[in-house]
Each structure stands twice: as structure tokens, then as C-alpha cells.
Length: 128
Image (spheres, helix red, strand yellow):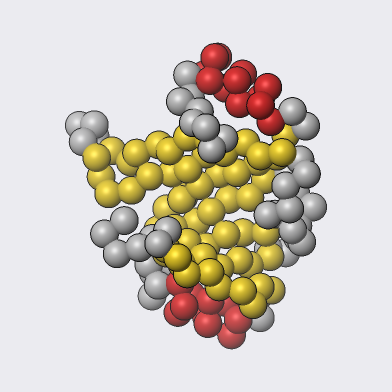
């Protein structure tokens, strides 16, 4: 079974999220959208779209979506078969959160790494 196939997103907290988003937009040219982040389209060596995107988002430090982790970041890893990976991680004794979300955006599950960081696992929807 393939496990992680890529990075689906990078999310981090900021004391002043709007100001930090503006800094990244102005100085690094990141196309920050109304939702607070950007989506980077994967491309091949010739610049042609290659079947995926990586989300990037700055969130308020009050955002609770990283809980129970106290870290200021969370990485979303793209996977092929979320349910099989969750089962394997549980069998290996990993701290897997019980909740699995399934929506139009795909399937999501979370595991806590040995340092206490919440890691998001994402199986994109078919064709996504």
C-alpha cells in the first residue's frame, strides 16, 4: 500500500493573520484568496498541470482546527487509500483520532505524531 503521495496543504497560525497574509502577498507574490490562503497547482517540468494542488493558508492563532496539538502549523498529506492507511496506523500503535470526515472535498483523517503535532491525511475525491 502506498502511504503519503504528496503534500496536500500547509496551514499555520499567526498572531495577525490578515497582516501576515498581506505580507506574503506583497513580498512573495502569493495569490492569497478571500478564504485566507492560496492553491498551488502541481505542474510537470514543462509547466503543464499535473493532477493536483497544494493548499497554503494562514489562520488566526485562535483557530482550533489544529487541536489537540499545540503546534502553530499543520501539514496535510495526500494519500491514495485513507481507510486502509488509518487501519494500518492503528495496527502500528499510532495515535489516530477517531473522526474521519467525508465530503465533496474528499476524505480526511488525523494522526498525532510522537512530538504531539496533528497531521492531516487527505484522500482527494475521485478525479481530484
